Length: 212
Image (cartoon, rainbow, N blue to C red; front, side, top):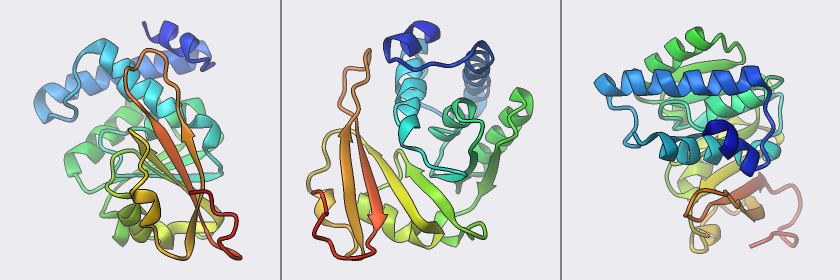
């Protein structure tokens, strides 16, 4: 089922990567029985709402350092880290049980390009040069996302806000020193729901080229 979903959405992974994602889902379901990490338990829904949804933004990720804030049980960070082994991902969540799960899953899967941190994102210190990409799948409003993560951005870094329906109202509420670079509709075959990716950058000149 996973391989078919990947193929239908033109996502190319090697056998080792596919096995790693399958193992991640196995670990998630095993831990979920005790720790309630996800409300989505149907195998088909997990593949599309967790894995394909996460991987739908893979082409937008810029490295070498990326950060997934409010990662929950590691989404979209872990699927992206498996698909993009040349990029280092920092996964941040305030929940201890979620971070413990992620840390154990990383050991089990042998994933070495991920660091999991239990902390509120506004209290997080950036790496020396900052993060090139900061992403959020279900963090909060775009305005809140920008305000709480802007101190973590590298020079010319980008914020990626994953949304459902087109967030027209939220686009006009970002801080004045940021601009919307692009709003992409993400066509996910097999998922009967809208998905959009909002790409945000810090203003370096004027806002004349802002795409709202």
